[in-house]
Image 1 (tube, rainbow, N blue to C red):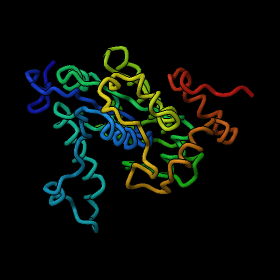
Image 2 (tube, rainbow, N blue to C red):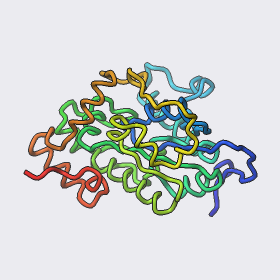
Image 3 (cartoon, helix red, strand yellow):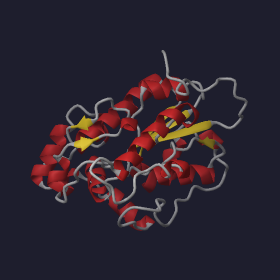
Image 4 (tube, rainbow, N blue to C red):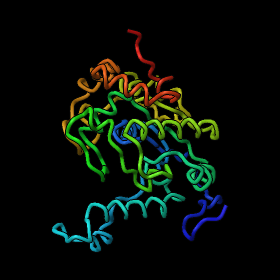
Length: 277
């Protein structure tokens, strides 16, 4: 496979002794939480997400009061796309990207990386994304029912190929499908659910390839939100209460039917089957 300069596989002649671990998960699935847990309780090299906009790059962004032909927000997203593709051979790229052939061949295989993919209950994830539509560059409706039915403009670094996604439900299903594909093509990979992680972290991580590298200390979760940004952060008890109560039935009847229809055939329905009514 041919790659542009700087985009090829990572060198294989590394001498690092610590295992390389890479997290993949959509926005609002608990990647910050799992990152903190791994850093505190495991002896490993955690590959970072690709860079945001660097200080040097910020100098080249248009001003906040811009004219007709420029957009500071779109420029930031374009630069983060660039950073993802350039850095992917070194760090695996954007942690919210789909698992792709590029990720597998340029990073996971040459770095012999352990990959952990995170998923969260679709109904809970959609609510969270509506509250915090990180990296959304299109119109975000205030109404939740309208939001889940509206197109989502994906970033290039989402690694989905297609940029105009039918709606956020389809976006999430596509990411989940990519993780399933990675599991079929990579032995050192685990799929972890946010709910299992927050309700039973030790038993959940025991089932992953990182467990042999545990430092020995009891695995505790932070009492406050592991994410230092976003709206309405909660404490651990509140997050656990929400995780234990997740259900499609928290949606209106029409929204529930729509989400389940859009998830038809997705592994998300295997992980999170709807309750019978």
